[in-house]
Length: 332
Image (tube, rainbow, N blue to C red; front, top):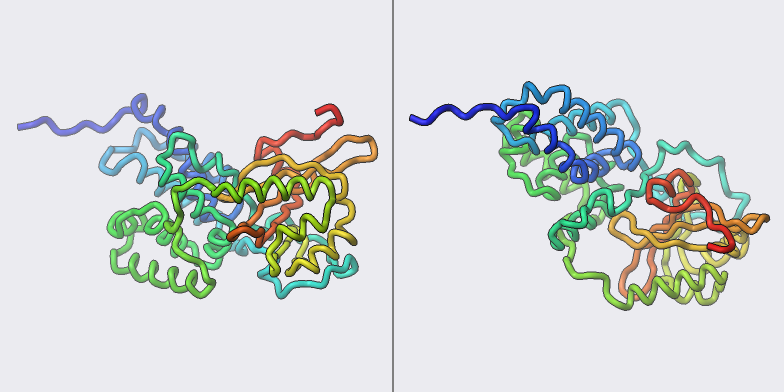
């Protein structure tokens, strides 16, 4: 007769906690729609887990135990709080006129970007990395914010992380039938918003024409070559600029904006990064002293050989989160 398995000790478990930080950050970000809140939620998860390690009996995996804690942290954070939004949630496109600008809405109104590096560790399998990036794309995370919290949990765990229905039911303390029903309702909501499954990503690298397109975009933007810039855009390109409620559609409107209210972008410099599974750039505006300082984080959407969306997050706190420098001096 074999001896009963003993529960793992704190000394055995404590070093293992940190290995789950990346995937828990991705999970919390999809739940909350905020990169900063996701970081806080994961830290709170780790604190709760560390305090309760002596009670972990090993009957479930450490991973599923941490997800249960993270789920409770996220649901607590969502209780009584309005969902994170995009400018397109507030109405149709605007005319490109500065006088239509309203006071910026508060930071907690908006969906925030997430650095790819925080949720896609470099050692990940290429296919898993592709799915992780696809499942944090802005459109997908924005659509998740329209789901009630428990439906978000079910959809993320079932369709992004590929948990079994029984595993999700155990985590939520409910039945498999309830999980399947919640998944069906969540899927219907995303379908209504034209959002495909999160596991549709390809593991192949970006095609060469995208790299060439991005190089042309940076060159045109830094030279303030509006004719060259517009040539890279889809006819129905969309531009939005949280925390501003205003958003634009169409090449002509974007051109009018850049030559009018956006003229201050002339002389900008761009540094590449990646956000939400998409190419992104830190935009630095030129100051009177010749120093370029953070202005906004641009996240691009590309379809085919054209740029179809530009989201400029005008929150300079994001630069530190993305590991971008605080300024660019003339000699840098």
